[in-house]
Length: 387
Image (tube, rainbow, N blue to C red):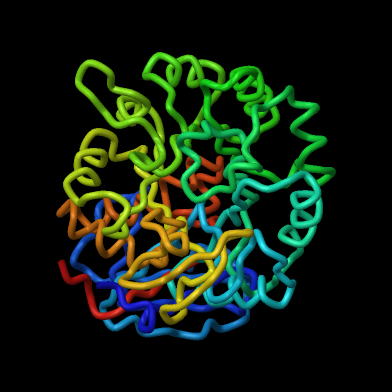
């Protein structure tokens, strides 16, 4: 595993003085394959920089950190997380609880994330968006909100309140529903087969918001139509969508042709299905936790928006049912299981939590890499990876 307790995470929000990491196994999927030779990396003011340039341009001596041969990777990015460590982003969070959640995420290697809201009412969106976009320095970075809903197929609503599910209108109607902070939204999950969905997908895409297909009964052809209008992602592949059939491939059939997220917690998707999806589209595979407030806390009763959730036996379910209500896994746990499920290389696995989500968000070169000039979001791993 990659023990969260032994993962040291560095985030540029701290704007720390120069730090030189030596004797590290550098893992950067965007650069040359990892060698067995130890390497070094210099960060300054939250940015990866060239040691040669720093030597000639600065008199400030860096603090030296001996990585003792451990893996040093870009920080992990989670584009779908509903809450953690007692904070439910969809139910009356406070700035203090949000900050605690984001600071705690650093301990799991998650240096950046997209705070995710379940299907809500317009007043709830208008109330929550300003709060969730408030700055929290020294914590996991907010890369833009993910609105999961409310434009879903009712039969595929999963752990979303049915009264909140509705058909989309045009882009103006969507902005009115979300409120004036609509431009802080980065991803919107919706069902492409609903009336007006294709028009909304096109408008979202033209405003640099990623339309993602999920909670849907759409056919392969309907998904293809949405892709042509700008859909850029499939939300939690396999879950809350029609299953794959060799004559009716459904949305699952598009996963080899476009980016998809997947929950590799060992609960939501069978390991063989995780590996099948990954082998079909390695560069498009993005690991997400879909975690809720109970992540990082003991078994017990919690909430997901207005819904009561029970955490137990490594999963979260709507109280009194078997319906999964997000996950309770952290991103480092999902990565560790993914490496086991797929037997892929460390570089390939790390790409699914760094390079691939950064590319989706249009942040290649800034996030998800160790390249000079990128944000010094860094994760120093524990004592290896056990498969």
